[in-house]
Image (tube, rainbow, N blue to C red; front, side, top):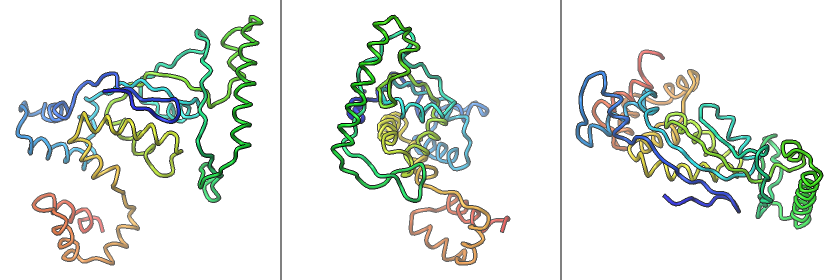
Length: 265
């Protein structure tokens, strides 16, 4: 798969994948010694695993990506500590003069102290950014020319400098990464990388992705208080009718009913 461009100079490239939907099914059935069954049965099994958070079979699928992103994005990215990572070293290499320059600035959010909102068109802000980049990189080069070690000279470079890294992650933890980084409250820049990764993951494990999208990405969990409130508003009959109209039937329908009206009121 070709690299997917992200931001102004970045990209995500899928290097390799170990496993697919069949690997998830194979891992789940290993204790029974059963081989692959029909497409429908495999899909139902994957959906069951996702619904009930049986996560270890999803760990049998591993993705490796090559990513180019600004430092401030990478610092958020590496907070997900379950991956294997190798980043270009500023101690060994002279870092390239490549900086992320946003097309549009955003205003500080009024309610979310760590977020942004709305567009801020400010040519002076863009000019100030470019001026800062030029001064910082000139200082970096001057320090190197003076014989200052690369590991120290890099201290003057700003956080919008691009870096590159390899990132290897199993599917279970990759799904967790995407849940957080595709969320509306995630910073816009890292969401663009998450969208590119999601496109690649969906192409390689379509059954797992469909179940993930249904039960995790587009789903929500409810607290005990929230469940009690819903039980006070709905009857089992009305809820069952609504579920049937949405296509649920059989054991899947009963499971949904038990989730709301089961033994833990």
